[in-house]
Image (cartoon, rainbow, N blue to C red; front, side, top):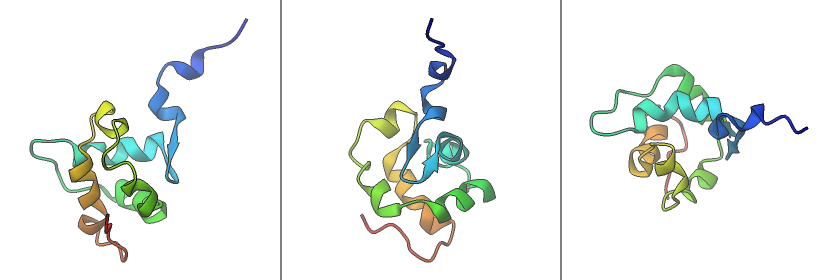
Length: 89
């Protein structure tokens, strides 16, 4: 039989633009309306290793909203983390 334990939480199994599911979840509160808190150190650390240009391609995708992440807020996170290369999508 096939072990389907890995399908319990698809998000954690996915890697998007050099960010693991756990990285995405670390940033999720800061990209969830209506009043997102500032990004955590964990989120900013994850973003510092992420492929921001790649993340920009998800701006109009249904993937982020399906995870409860607002793409417009997500795009602001690198800037809020004061990363040297803000997202110019």
